[in-house]
Length: 74
Ligand code: SF4
Image (cartoon, rainbow, N blue to C red; front, side, top):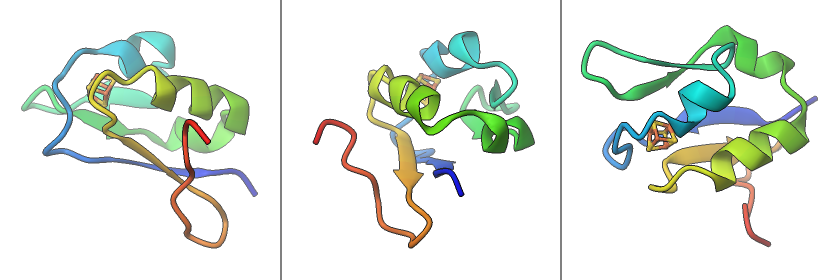
């Protein structure tokens, strides 16, 4: 099973990096805050890692199948 993805809504600064990189997995809500789409489940973990690392606000949270937060830069 791959990583699960969530967005820290308070941290997101609406840069759009995630939406531009993987529009099947991320979109903006009506407040221009990123939201995770169902397509995120189909992206490989390496791709999710890249997107999360490229978030300028560190707002994309990945968890492994045990629910532990993934250390993006570890
Ligand atoms: S890359 Fe990060 S800051 Fe930019 S829209 Fe996505 S979650 Fe928000």
